[in-house]
Amino acid sequence: MRHRIASPDGLHTRGVIRLRLYRARERQRLIDPADLEVTYVAVEPETTPVFEHDGVMVWVSDPDHCRVERRVHGQDLHLVESGTNILPRARGLEILRAPGEDYRWVHSLDWRWGAGEYLDRDRIEAIVDRAVDMEPWAVPEGPVGLVHLSHLMWFHNGAMANGAAWPLDDCAAEQIAAFAAAAIYFELDDIADLIGRLEADDALSHEYWDLSSPFGEDASLIRDALRCKLVEAPEDWG
Image (cartoon, one colour):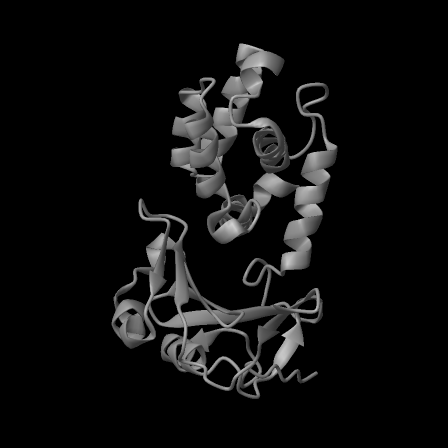
C-alpha cells in the first residue's frame, strides 16, 4: 500500500528538525537544516538517535542502517524499499531532506522483519496499556519486563497528574524503591535519580515532565526505552 503525504508548503528543508537521543545525557536538541548532514553523520547509534522532520522519523539503528517511520491519521506507517524496512543509513539523510516525497509507506501491523527486528508502535501501545491495567504492588505476577513497566507507568501517570512527589503521600518505601528499580531496568538513569531525590518541590515536577515527555509527547522516553528492551531482552516479556 502506498501513501503519499505532501508537505503543507512544499518546502521540506525549512523549519527546524528535532533530534532525540534516548541513551545520552543530552536527550534532545533542535537541528537547523543547514547542519543536518554534519549532525546525522556524526551521531552515534549507541545513543539510540531519532531525527524527526515534517512528521517523518528516522531511527539510526546501527552505523550503516536506519529505519524510517511516520504516523498519519492515527495510523503507524514505516517505509519499505527493495522489499525491506532496513535501509542504508545514507538513505535516511535523503529522506529527512525531502520528507514529503512519494515514498512506499506500509502499515506497521502488515510488516515484520524477523523476530524483534521491527517493533510496530501498535504493539508498544498494547503493552503499555496492559502494564497500566496491572496493579503490580497488589499482585506482582507476570513477565519481569511487564512488571517493571507497570511500576514505571504508575509512577509516570501519577507524576503527570499530581506532580512527581505524589508517592511521598501515597506509597510505601518499598513501592518507591520499585519505581526506581523499574527506571534502572529500562536504563532510564535520570528518572531513577529523580525518584531517589523526591521532595515536595514543583521544580522537580517540571524536571520530570521535561525529561519523560520531550517535545510534549507523553511518556515518549519510556516508550522508546520499551522498544529497546523488547529487542535486547525478549525473554523478559513472556
